[in-house]
Image 1: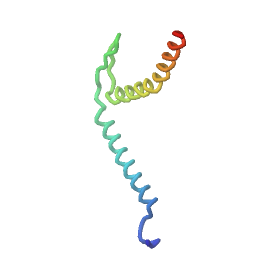
Image 2: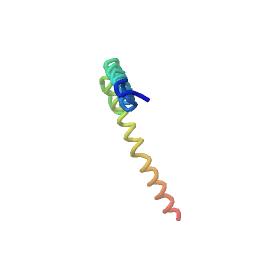
Image 3: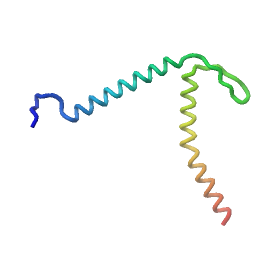
Image 4: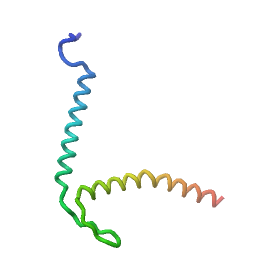
Length: 87
């Protein structure tokens, strides 16, 4: 049995671990951002642009997330329409 004055309870320990993990993740994120600030040339189909590497990474992440979120619904609708046209 534990005394109330002997330290942290389980809930407090879990919260402390979560805060520690968040601090480590935040430090890694800030380091990642500062390590990727150099300018890079990005070639699009019709033009070329220069941008900071971190913005290229973030925009690719956002575009990939949006494509992964939107495309499955479009594919399901396309397949459903194709099945109804065959019948």
